[in-house]
Image 1 (cartoon, rainbow, N blue to C red):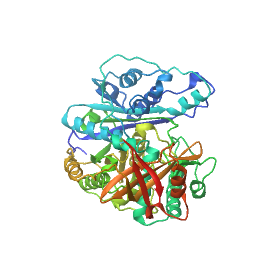
Image 2 (image 1 turned 180 degrees about the horizontal axis):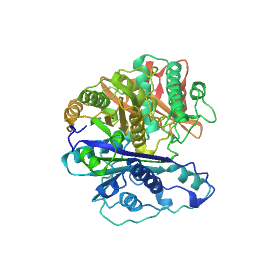
Image 3 (image 1 turned 135 degrees about the vertical axis):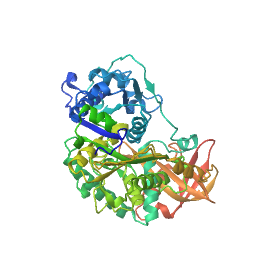
Image 4 (image 1 turned 60 degrees about the horizontal axis):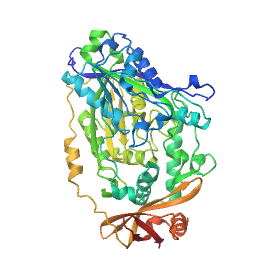
Length: 517
């Protein structure tokens, strides 16, 4: 072990927590900051060296969902903690030199591990605490019950707020129905189904079986928010408990954000770990990593694939000198089934043959806002310590398959750690000619579609369609007489929309579907 360079970055601490608050006592309700502080405390204890707190010079917090969309700060109903990294530091006796609040997106935890591994290697940081937490379940319960919670706190000190990050959508997309994740991922899902040549029933069965396997993992995970195994029959059939969200998704097909969860990780160098006496059997090495961003949804050549995911996974494995078959453990980001199917296809693995989550996934473990992957990495740390010869893969995405990250981990040491550049992948994606989007009266071949639901009733249809090599995105309008007929046509079990055409009328800013033929 002494031939490992002392500036090699390692993970030395991991902590998680979950709170199943019953809503009876406001004083017992968790807050986002209490959950992340508790997880941080557990990560510090996990290191086995109390002195690590004095060495931590960076605390970075994953951005809360409440702070992830412009003009939306749901936590203001109960007050906000104005400087989350400093709060976590104060509660755990840490005075970091830098306090960072991350950008938006589920890619953020893995991206921060990669970033601060580079900083540790370069000597820009000696120990880093990453943490995040969400108390969305507590907030929702308190609001339902008319209960007041007090989440206000003001910690002084410099804060590096990284804001929202890159734009995920353009004006054309938002005007024509692309926006909410549960209304946009169905376009990827149905495009994937069409490319695979599967019927709606066949793909529904695949989604149900995939998620059944995930729910089994969650049922055995003490940190899962929803520890109930769900059978494939339940997951496939609409019911009062599993109602339609957006075709083809039912409630339990999508990430569940009503969670009270926190997670934390501690990174340092091999040299600092030795100095502090952190046992070598605690060390987990980041062997490689990669990251890349997609083009806007409407401009991607193929909605059933992710060039960024394909490039990121390939680079991470190649840099580690490994293949997907060498990965004993995987956690593929699971906000919606297509995210797993697309990543599994890029890796060349069959989702029927192996588990693709270490937590239970976002629908069953819990969709802890932007912080889910922090939990996945913490869980991976535990598995790799118990199986020190194994390798594990973490794959995450943010937005609409928009921001892809991956990391390869093991207790097996890496002897010549070097930063990994993803510039070539990004350059390749950026060089792809974007599909031109149009707004005009036309009849176009349907590429993908969804029907969204509101209060149990079909409410809106969205299609992407191809006309002379160009893509048009269109939706129904609530005040248009054709809306109900369009929705009925798309849901008609006898006719697959992938084989049909859409008549579209272009208004000033919006493309309106007037008929399906």
